Image (cartoon, rainbow, N blue to C red; front, side, top):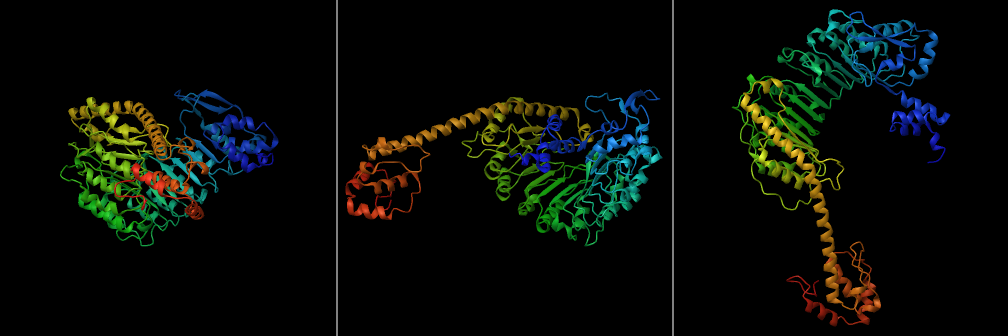
Length: 637
């Protein structure tokens, strides 16, 4: 790299973004040209406000009044002169996180005292403490102090709203905080709210706050917060591409979504690409059937509240296959919210899931249901043939009602053959069923990372056979993977389902999990040995090809066999013209035998050889060796 390029700030910042903080800090001391780019990278992302507050004034550790923990406080008041030093680094900060939890290398009981934020609010020379901040994550009991860092240039906000704010505790209560978001940061593109209370407490102000955020693209809310009123207001946001809920974002009240009834105008959700809801499937089917935005959806994730009948599943999949032409990911979690809602009277078959085969662009499909899916290995081979672009396929790996699986380990074979890009596979299969070890597998799984078998039965005595079978299908040679696929087992239900099972069934699941753990233990060693075996076989096959070629040459032309280079890397055998009387027919023979394509510029040579030599002796010699296949002669070879 030239010295000129080494001084370009843009190039340096790209290089520093891949270096460790220690390396970047050392690089800042190399020269003045490297100082600014290195400092920009060092201060780009801050995971604790204490790092910034320490620039203003020294701090000390004191015991709180209640004696429950220790806190950090300023030793003195912050002066205006302190802000000049602070601003030199503050303008570089783009991302700030405050998790109010134990930081690496510090005591979990030492926190930032509120007085430090109060002092910052009192002495700050401007409204925006960090004027170039773009991403803020604030997970603390004192949500109100997050307003110190919120400004019009902020693009992404993750806020944890604690229950205490509903009672007016802290700097600002929850309603006021949510209501002020549009005025504080009108250009927000990503908003994430974490809370563990009913959305009814803030639903009114939340809806009013979302409507002015016309640039909002992604919204993440706690579970049970996506009520019909909230979703209806989201349909009017012109730039919204994705709204979702997450388990780990907190949980509201289930009762808030039981009366879900959505009426979306035809122009609703003009930019939506991902749909993520927890409502009954027939409700979604009703409002999607006449919605226009369904044509632009690329991802659908639905979780049901009550038990879903197979006919509704088929109708929904039929709707997706006919209207969702751009659909690439479809995830259906159709477990009801409680075990009492479950019933084993419903059975999902391949006929129910058949419309998925018409979704030619789909790459991710997961389906979860209380009863096992009744499909055959022939059905799964049809899926592999019709959907060769699959990256993920999960088919009810953990049914709540255990039964004898209809699939065996042989179900994996069609996906080895037809789905080269598969990364995640999951089935409820019978691990104890004896399946012959597959013969030579031309293309093992090269991208498979996870094999999810859920609660599939497997005896401990059969774990080695299962690992041996899987080793034929996996490889690390020529693959971008550094580890063998992980074999995941265990139920994926909520804890309420597991607790409702009788002890004997829980014990059975535990034993199955131990058996699959043994498979995970054996598999890496067996895959390594299998790769070594494949490499040895490949070398032997190459040597055999060379020996066959040498044998043929020695039988045809004993006098020139030693002058032929048998290396498979050579495009055509090299011989001397004066050593062979009929060179052209020799080349034709090599072309027929080895399948190598010779140059088309042989017409002149053919002309010359016709006038100069006679073919008859060579043709008689070739015919006597019987090297042509049955039914072929030297005239048509």
